[in-house]
Image 1 (cartoon, helix red, strand yellow):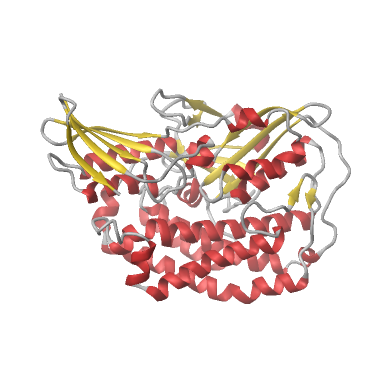
Image 2: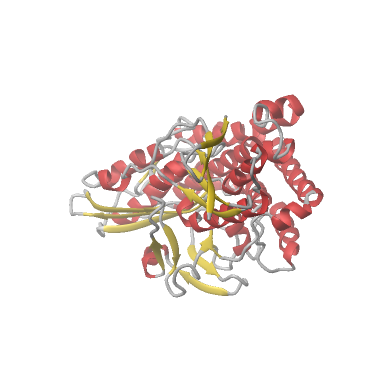
Length: 474
């Protein structure tokens, strides 16, 4: 018999709006915990009738945290719909902007959103368990973290005039070049940001070693892993085919992004607006997988940049070469990707084509249908557009990074609640661990459901008679 239901609404230090309900038993243990994404705005539907050339400015409004990811995915879909593949210099410039997005988003999440839990403690006072508390605890580290995010944003604004909702990528290429002085401004900051990223890697590795017991019991479970790949199965964040490996690391599929619906389907549950993608051949839930940093680092057999590749080898050793299943390892994987992105910035800026004027293909051979895929910070982002002969959209399908991880977040919430939540009086730190099960995935729920919501949090515990037994406010 369920005697209590705890509601965490909304979950804090994530982007967007969600809630968690924890159903308790008579003995104070957890019966089941549910992760609900409970907002809906219908973004795909109201894009119908718009021109494909407008989508690069419409879809970034889904989110203020990762607008570049939608901007570039929309441009890549537009390339295919209009039949105008971009020149190589334009692709390099787009990827450079994308590296800025990875750096600013990953840096912010590790240090300022997840970091307070790791650096200050899950049970720390919520009034100070935030970036303000980090400033008080370690002002030098906090300044470095802010500068890391600012560096990523400066790359975006250098190319797209502003760091949020940039205007840069268009079907067929980009609309401006990178001047030599812009390249030099970025390069001048790079060494400092690589050092900050390496410091972040040391912090997370030291934390995982010091808290090994927590890492081993905090939502560790098997899934497949999914994301973009280079032809030789290296880490890829901008372009490439899609690759899926199984729970034991065995290869399952490698396929073109244009054919994703032949392999991926979406399951629906009544308690969430967010769908549950899965691999068709295995069905649901056997075919569920994880995306984002943990998915991509498990998927990658090597990384093309030297510093990140050395960290990848150490990451792979955690589970003797088998996929790392620990939810808290998302943080380590996230910082490895940040290091790769910083190194990749140097590689891109050293390419002579990065300063080229050949940035737009104006010749079009429309196809009427195109799929644009990119690895957003949170995982694989798919924009699928159908258009008529005038370039007006007739159908839009968006599978957003957070959607791919819906099963994993739901599973993690349930496992962490059962491990840590105990009644009759439920402590705030217990519930913060449940929130961190979501937070570790760095979800963007406005993207996943194209939603909006308010951020104050109130946790109510209701007894079997419907009476309010306990309230926790933030």
